Image (tube, rainbow, N blue to C red; front, side, top):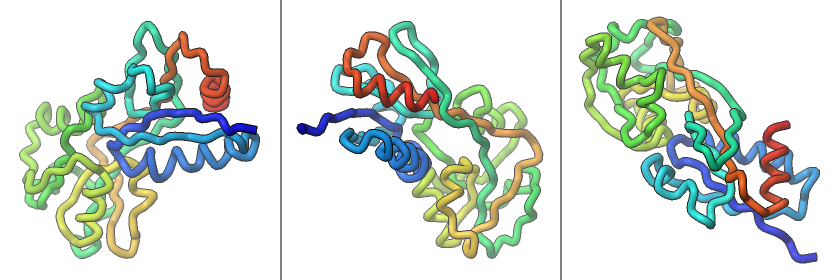
Amino acid sequence: MQLQRVQFLSRRRWVAVAETLVPKIIKKYNIVNPDTRFNLINLNSIDLIEERYKPDIDITICFNAKTVSNSKNIIIKEGKHFLVSPKKYNLKKEIYLKDLSHFQYIEITNLLSLYSDSSVMNYFINNGLDMNFYFKSDSYSAALSMIDEGIGISILDDNTISKANEKLVNISNILDTEFTYQINAIIKKDLGSSLCNDFFNYLIE
């Protein structure tokens, strides 16, 4: 029997989607549908908006996606962000952002979810927090790698943090506010592929 292909897209935004959440979903799905093949395409947030509804993209998995009229949108995970820092800083397990202004901060750029309702950057601006923006990165994974090397601090999502080496980093709960997020799966309403619809229905369940 010829193997069929389901193609879907995830945002290259975080280590979370491509290296934690999606592999777990596919592993479970593969148990009940072993003949299905996946094509995972990693894009950053700007590319995601431009590519989401191209004909060769069947399912999009991304953060804080808004529903549009020709698509179905479900939430497959919800979570929050934490402050991650090198062990050498010896930061407390619960911390206020105002106490971090002298540390070299890694700003995550080109990530639309940071500018959502629970935006990290908007919170800094609205509350007059003058952070020491020393580094910029368009990848949570890269930011985590820098912190592993003892460089800078950053606010990262709990999926990315699951890959952290806790011998090298501290993970602190942010007391000021909760920076929450959603991971959404989106499919076009008029998509004819039964395989893609089967996978999407699996995500719903």
